[in-house]
Image (tube, rainbow, N blue to C red; front, side, top):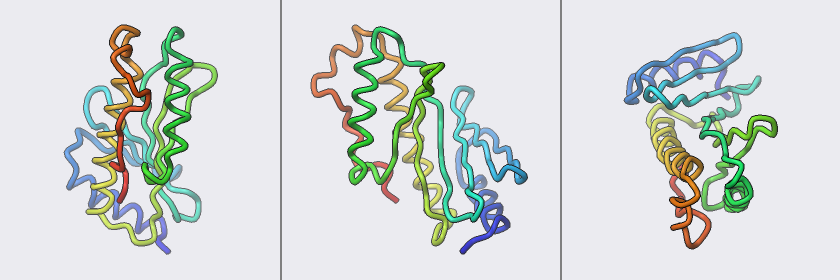
Length: 155
């Protein structure tokens, strides 16, 4: 089982391979922030036992007029855990900020596999961000409800 030093080394190796603007590390909290671009930050947290890494990113505030539609889509996505590899959607109940989360077991994780999962995570987050931030007229073109996110988060 990896320890915090192993995870630190993994994040350091991955940050050299990824095309990100900046990486900030806080070992006291076992967290890393990857600044993908001026608008997107991916947070990576390690649990106390270093058994898993959790990737998360904010997707935007869900507009009042689309809240039911977007929340229904988010719940449907959560149901597709086999297809998504376990990625899930969440929402802050006070701010209505949507968030995408994905857990990675750290046991046999190397920098290459982490980078693959990270890239897929960023890609899926972009699709969700577009769906959440679309106005009602833009979203009306969606006919099947759930976007086709496929199995992009599989590692």
